[in-house]
Figure 1 (cartoon, rainbow, N blue to C red):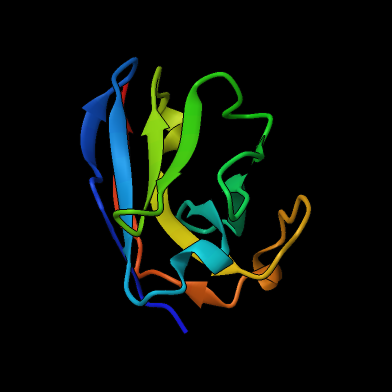
Figure 2: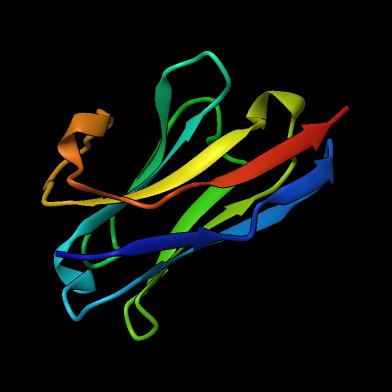
Length: 124
């Protein structure tokens, strides 16, 4: 089992940047694939990015490709999401998730563990 706590959200102007962090507890962080999802008000939780257990393979939603970068630091048990060139449509609560997946897995149901979320608001 793993506990996840996100941080780094906030208010930023369009075109700006933010880096989200997700701190994982326990010694099993490296055994999980990790992902970021986001949920805007009144909408479903959408896949943003995924990274493999070893950090070698990454996947991105088309809407963030080229602007967002997912990474992980196993020594710090931390997952990151670097978000550049932010747009108002990126406004959402961002969640990190952990799961035993071995290929692209963009469905929330593939992930067993979730953080509480962090709010990202991009003003125009």
